[in-house]
Amino acid sequence: MPSNHKFESNKKYFTISIYTIAVILIGCVIFRFITQWSNTSKLISQLWEILFPFFMGFLIAYILNPVVAFFQRNVSIKLLKKKSASTQRGLAILISYLVMVGFIIVCLRFIIPQLYDSIRELSLMIPDIYKSIMSIFEHYRENSTDMFPGQIADMIETKTLPKLFELTNNLLTNIVPMLYEASMSFAKGLFNLFIAFIVSIYMTIDKFILKNAGKRLVLAIFNENFSYRVLRTLKDCHNIFSGFIIGKSIDSLIIGLLAFVAMTILKLPYTVLISVIIGVTNMIPYFGPIIGAVPGAFILFIVSPTKCLIFIIMVFVLQQFDGLILGPKILGESTGVRPLLILFSITVGGAYFGPLGMFLGVPFFATVQFLIGNWVDYRLYKKNIKLEKEA
Image (tube, rainbow, N blue to C red; front, side, top):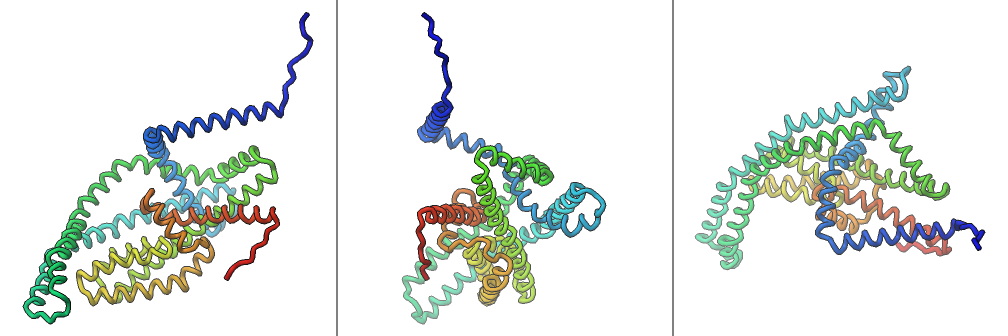
């Protein structure tokens, strides 16, 4: 006798089954990635190489976004009062990209040739400087005042100095081939940079479309209250990240220009080379000034110890001005990251992503610190736990 019972679906168990299958599949994928790590790392490298132009395009668009907003607010709206907002934004985008291209052309036309000449001149000076220092040691041997033991002098003369100058000479001599190789790599990667440039333009034009698409996606996945919490958190993260990048870029540009002016007034050599080093390394908080001062001091010490001392005093004054006056005015509380975490972020970021990682590591970890702090505060609030802040 046939049964009249019909199959009745159970929404609760169906949802549990879907989640279970999804968790098992994700677990299998993670297990395979871990057990086949060599293939996984190769796959990640290939994927990163493919997506790198899009990442660079996003980074360009992200950095230029405040510039576009500035020109739209102060230029295009005033010039095109009767035009639509999209037309006004289009003009602001055009001006921003023209400014960026102009800045790149100026660097290629004026700064890079001077850097090349300075490095080449330094590499040619190394043999003469080595002979001068060796003659000083010969003079010391002939007129010994027993200022320090002879064994130490022998060790410095026969081992330390030759190795140091050999390393320096090789570094400076190989910089020219390195620059050539870098130029060839740049030529090979020109297509990727072109793609990144085009992607950044489209991202800048479609900023509000992409923003609304992301907002709709969050609202579609989560419930309304949680969605708006997520969106608020993302906005705060954006403010931390962009605030650091914009503020530190402006701060470093000013410091680099001040270093150039001060070195010109003090008549120190290699003004362009050293001021560029100071400006670029100043992008790294706390430790950037030290990183930038060391190569500059070494270069000037080779030329003249007196000029090296003047340079060190100049950098100390400049960094005090930056740390006490300029930095707080521009950056304010944009990161709030402690020095220990900054050291960690610079180390990890530099180890995995080079100079770009050293710079972006700080705002990244500042954002992570902000997210963890918010989560901890929320959990303590839910548990009704109040902690007194220690001095």
